[in-house]
Image (tube, rainbow, N blue to C red; front, side, top):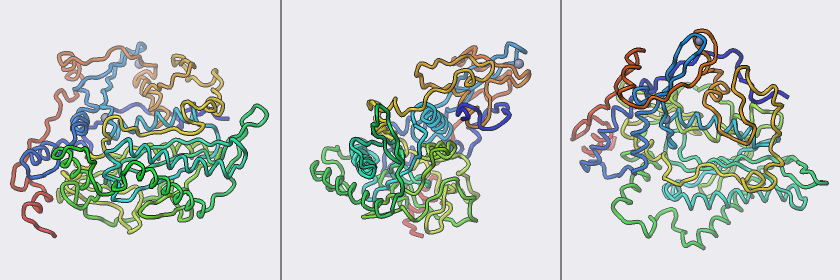
Length: 494
Ligand SMILES: [Zn+2]
Ligand SMILES: [Zn+2]
């Protein structure tokens, strides 16, 4: 069996710093953030950006900039040195931070948590009317997630039909659609079968065949349980009302922003103009019509699966479920001043891209940031942290002698799940950040440079940006040079 620690691509490339300040996303946020804030302060937009989202938008503009501080790597062999910038560790939309976290989590799950059995993805989406509430009420969303996951778990246990049979799952709570509209939904990855005790060992039985009718039964059953839960808590108005205890004013203005981000049609998070484009290349994952059902505005898709021997497929599924909402290459600025988001997969109506005002894009980014204490990944069944079966189904550690690349410091085998980013880059892109560009020796971390007075001389010496790029100042009323604001001011409905 090939060790999953081995790099996926042959020869390592030399690390080139990605320059976040040159991406379209950075430019759009930097050019428009202060205009959006000013339009809100001015009362021209009656919404409010939540504090946690403001913090993350500001931090994003510093992410990956050497002039905000860096780590210094040095090669003892030839005295070459290299600087690596700090990141914002965003939880909402930063493509590089969330991309890195996606790689770390899926690598860790494959190596240390997931048994080598088939994996099936169950995607549950909620009706439009529920989305605003689920996006802000982490506790309610967690409850509904648990009810759904338990329903699928008991289906697997029943199909296996042995007493005490159990499956396990990892559920990613995603907040947006691929056009960044607010759309809290679930990607539940289930071990596609169940374990049972057999003579002191855990035996695995794969689910033989899943029928579309069964997917429909599961959805119906889950909805009944959710309905009961909402009735018990007096929340049947989940679709329409604000929480009774919310203080009005601030909460209303945050709700107005979320409502606009759900529909994507009204300012400030909309409108959006849909575009049909030449078909994009097919993605690695695709959904077939069988095993997809819908009911009362809910949809459940269970057609995507990766087999037990398909390591690449299982890792791709994990990454798909854990992916950031926006990859930098899906965003571009247009000559007409709008920004275009290319969809990962065409919508059923043939839409392949949407164009929107830069201010609308930032509003959507703001709503993509989860509130504090809002969990985004949940483990259940045999994969739950407290499950006594978790360790018994986990993959056995690889043979130590072939796991470490030559010249690397030995990593502890003591259950630590931290993965140095250098190893992650290597694993993901075949980029070896610790390889010396001159002599191909191994570089070492020698300093973290965070003081402005020390940052400057270093960067001047290597011809890097010394100052943080300035944000564009706020544009002014009445239209703020924004298509959306002009329409709003003139009542133009075109
Ligand atoms: Zn970041
Ligand atoms: Zn060197």
